[in-house]
Length: 592
Image (tube, rainbow, N blue to C red):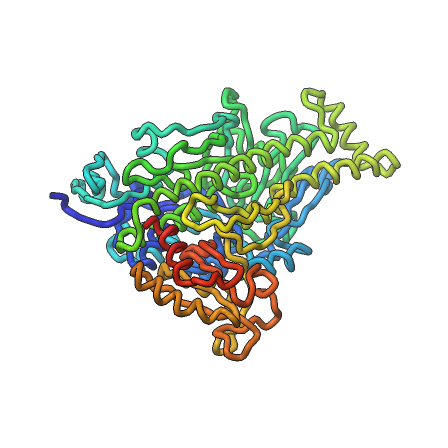
């Protein structure tokens, strides 16, 4: 007999694992989280939280806590390319280009129309303690750090793990019906023989986390600044710098600078060079930074070939790792466990069959693969920027210096070069304005949904232009409604955090109400019905007609929304037998 029996064991206390715990708690799923380290991460790691992630955090009561301490969009809605922060040379402190990003500036209205909340920015070194606090509040005694899984085996209908309590130096066994491996790919995937497919060991990234007062030099609205100069051919000669708060904008107390090295370059381990090189890169010879941490991480783009192995599910970095460009790593991991948690809840409650759990890999693997490919595309595109401003690989510093002089010259050629640079650097919008990549992904027809035969809508090849749709598999479009008390409510709020399906109907969809009762009774699942419309009798008012523009079904039609706010089924009209149609749809979704 095991010492502890739980429905779900989460292994890993990073952003992905802690999010899984939060979602499971809200869904009423008993679970235990174990993490081998004594504390959350001491590295800044990821920081950008895209709109889809913030929607998920909003659904589960986390978003407001992040917004309260994270950077407001006014402080991170722009990125820049500069020669340096300081210095008095002819090429110092020159702005090469700046770009609106993440829904800031002129992008804001479009981003706000598509989601109930803006993107967020809060480095993982601070986000994880916040998530840990909330997770502990919702599952007291079930968030256990300094507890390491030493061994495990899959037996009939369970995973039995041996855990070492490193504080008490004792061991105990946990018998879990299911296990979520959010361990960063360190343990479960390798032992289970899961192949990580894709290129790896492309660069050794050296990240320096430090404190310094840069308020006289930093542009207040920029999140990231790339430094490019004639010495940029060396690994130390170029770098990306990110503000890390906890005060935001030019008054940020902490920063991270990333350098990229060839994996065989011995200079990457020269820690004594860090501070002198920072001073040289930034052209701030008097800079006296307090260095908190110098970390190394390998740049790769790999995705697990299998995400479910028996009763073990890989999530987050255990399932996919990609370049940081576009900021999809942590976001994709949080979205992984959001997809998985409600499915585990339905199966454990007896409402769904095991096939629902198979849909986790079917749905998330293509999304994460596309995200990893996109991140690599955006990373490689930085080399286009080098060429666009005239940096020639292997050229002497003197030649590149002349290229910079020409770029900034007050001549017709200088204007032409700056126009070329604008075009080339503008292609990096694929990284910083990837609105469709973040919101427009869809799950395939063989997932936990019922396809309606409609064509897959075309997507923007640049990744920027997102088109809302209620086509099954897509994220439910956001529209502001007026609730019974007159307060604004997003269509996303109608699902709630309790793992329920919701059927959205129009003013002529009354027959769907009885259908929902009958279908729910047959399948043992409650299906709340919400009428949205202009009529005063509607449950929620559509004050500006936006939902009517987005729903893509008639007043007699219906849209069935899953607990993760993806569309499960839609009917453009009354099908004549709404009970049978809805019953069949929900049974298909639940793997019954």
